[in-house]
Length: 331
Image 1: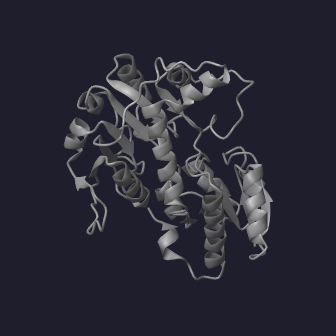
Image 2: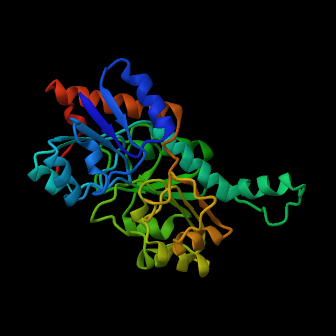
């Protein structure tokens, strides 16, 4: 069986080639993103494998369906870039990686929080220049801070355990709360109470019609003065223009994002010798209290192994007509 893989980097290819020795698929690797202009690359294949910033709109789905492709393998958990209704109409099966390593994303989230609370990134740059002054590096402790999590899935649950160890008070909102919190020490609140009470707000929810731009001028106005916002989920959860306003007025004391709503043509690429034309992103990068990483929260060896193994197992289950139902995406 032949699989066309899009948005492939050298590290993706290495992991897939190694894992595929146990599966025997014929893999074609394409560095380019999947779009209406690149669908012809999938001609002659039985399936395509796509990533978070590939275009899986109605037009693209129709084009790949015309090529006879009926399986899309998403090597990620999110699927907000897919027109699910059109995929269903075309009879295209979509499979994903619902979890790869909650520890990877939870630990990255904590790292971003600690960077903002203790200014490690600033100290690193200073000391490399021989500047060991502490002026401007005053931090704060997480102990007894109220940290609000929006969403309590597996990543958030790992983060709660970590934050419990720091002595932080954890509150959370989720429209589908856990039936059993086990040994996790946190309390559910309404979304409004979370906005009003949290010193730090961390996003751990999917992007959909209900959550798109849920952090905006109205919700920011409900937050504490000096709130810190962290997002390692999906960029579209935050409305960038309103974040900039909140930073300029000092309502927001710190922002850490691993995802960005207009990241598709920027993240995962080396833009160091290019002029980045996204004015909103460049404005964010100009703030001394903003930390941006390029969608790397998932990027550990364990997570990559799990992503690749699950993706190839999804393909195996489809072609052997023994579908892994828990990995299916439906409209």
